[in-house]
Image (spheres, rainbow, N blue to C red):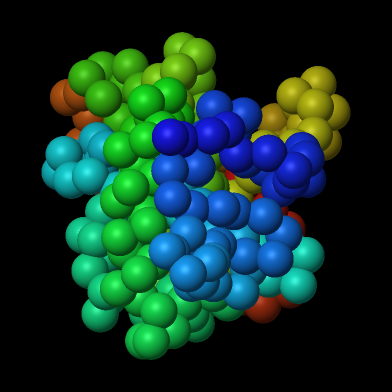
Amino acid sequence: EATPLEGFGDRAGLPDTLMVPGGYTVDRSGVWRDDHDGATQIAPEPLIMSGVYDDVDTGDANVRLSWAYKGTWTHRIVSRMVAADARQIVALSAAKAPITSATSSSIVRYLAAQESASDAMPYRRSTTRQGWHGSDGALGFVLGEIGQGAAEGHQVELRLSEGDKAGPGVLASGLTTSGKLAAWREAVRPMASCPRSLIGLGASTAAALLGILPTARPFVLDVYADSGVGKTSAARAWM
């Protein structure tokens, strides 16, 4: 019989609705399978499926896997196909997941049992791109790794493949919301007397407007000037 996952606290970032399938034990020492002659460890660190996702563009199913490594938790959204394939899931060991080629088959069976046992598994939507999602932007605007502006329960989260972590992943982690609108307005106020800077300022809002202006066409703004005249400073203000 399935039992609630307990003993990890808020620091692990795990939902409180997760279940451990019958025949298994998950604690700080790892994942254990109950056998007739005792318990067999199939993972030396805690590993759990902590969410189910649908890609809003393709409809493909993805899952969120969470694991600990020396006390630090990692959460990764991967294709459900990866979580169901003993050969593919081993690739997560590069991200310090407690999986080896010797244990991958047991891990896949455990995750399948855990998904079936967790009727209240958190469900969300995922994407592999930035920008607006859903009809007329109903699913919000993905900026960085988390969507903005969608109704509660309809947020879209960014999903990166393993090969994206050193490129798009770094870029996504740098795209965040911060600061105060009033402070930004005061900072860019001097641009009011410089039409060229205002053009760039207006262009910087184009991506956010595409979702609500369906007839708008893409364009390119080429900013050219000699070194030292303020192109980089102006670009930082536009962002």
